[in-house]
Length: 77
Image (cartoon, rainbow, N blue to C red; front, side):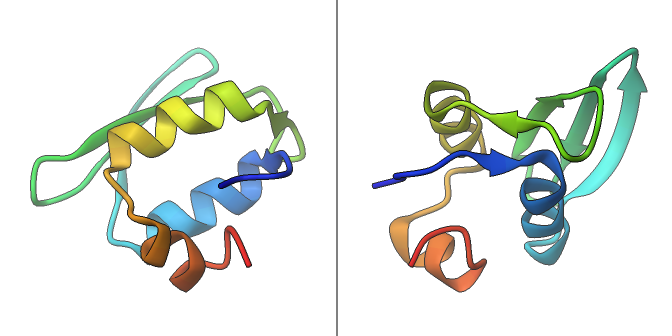
């Protein structure tokens, strides 16, 4: 489904566009929550950092985004 790495900037932009908000920060880990109870931890040092596919897959699992959601958020084509 995902054929390339996505930067922290792109991922956070998608989270916020979908209604997630930054709930807390601890070191390089940022915890984003959604009002419906979903939560995802995003770990990065610079917004230009790119996540490997395995990490993205786990974060996508936490967000419960469908393939249609990923297209709507411009994370895949």
